[in-house]
Image (cartoon, rainbow, N blue to C red):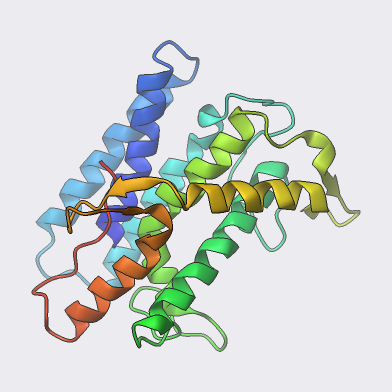
Amino acid sequence: MIAAKIANSRNVIQRALRDYPTSEGNNELEQVQRHLKSRLKSLEQLNQETVDTLRGIEGESAKSYFSVFDHLIRGDQKAFFFHGRNKRPPRDNTNALLSFVYTLLVHDVTAALEGVGLDPSVGYLHRDRPGRLGLSLDLMEELRAYLADRLVLSLINRQQVKQRGFSQSESGAVTMDEATRKTVLVAWQERKHDIITHPFLREKMEVGLLPHIQSMLLARTIRGDLDGYPPFIWR
């Protein structure tokens, strides 16, 4: 799952480099994509990894990825700047979008896990806490960049969301108005109807089925029907 998360994050950066080959910030993007590639190699070379070791690699890779996320924003950069991930509450427009779409994703993943008979609260990577959906958070890691981050970037870069749809409270928390939430929800549902070929099953399917397919593959792995879990890696 961690390898897939890093690979999919790297693919988001590589796509930006292909689409905007002369943009300012590409040097930083190139450096981070090479760094993420080295992180993938370090995962392959681990022999007796501990969960803490894996968490360290995941956390450091996520920090590197988000350090250049601002360079992926091509729309209204003044309104949708990104100076690092913040949450509970989000303190800028881009983080408000990310948090909202991540919430949509974790709901879909939770329903998918329950649908295949797995407890979404019992995870591997996320530490157990009361009320925490540990396994949902584990599984969604490999889907964040492909499903959530790409959607947020598309909404901003295509100017489907505007500054006027966001407001900041005295405490610094940023929220979206109803019209903006509706825009995001419609885009989310439309995205789920896109057709892809699953890299492991080699079958065409709607993007919205990914949480269910990955949950099914995880359940089959846990029950011994598969030798290893095949994570979703966008190619």
